[in-house]
Length: 172
Image (cartoon, rainbow, N blue to C red; front, side, top):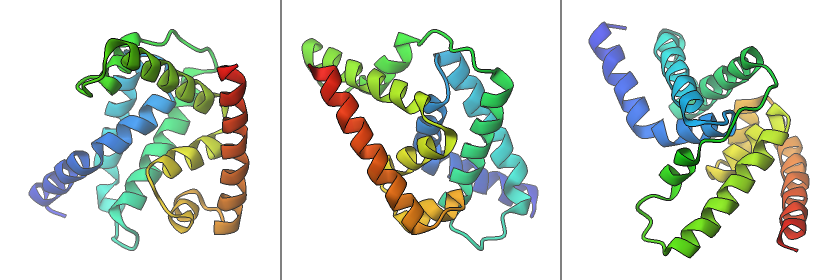
């Protein structure tokens, strides 16, 4: 692939899927600096993977795989020591939504809670929930993660039930 075509494809992928990449990155990091670092690492891996992309899968499937695999490797390298959560990262999530300060604070708490719960999950279950939140089908999730549709469905059902129970406990 020519450099100009490669650059054009890369720019399109980042423009089209940057939000998805950001969500994946946020689920694997604890502060804004780490988010930025991991996003850059995912972007680098996407750039380097373009020659290997043969078009046999949808670009979104390829991008999810690259982003998730990069996050898995990054998390292993970073170790298991949680870092401080950066409040500015949460503010970026709700900025511009036109919420009252009270509602924004409530949304921020819910969003913080959800990301904390995601961080507690193993990498496969975390990935399933992230892909579910992106409205992917069970088939697409299975293709990205190397699981059957049935396995994805069963895991997702258990995860949703677990999250609902945790949220109800939290609300008490």
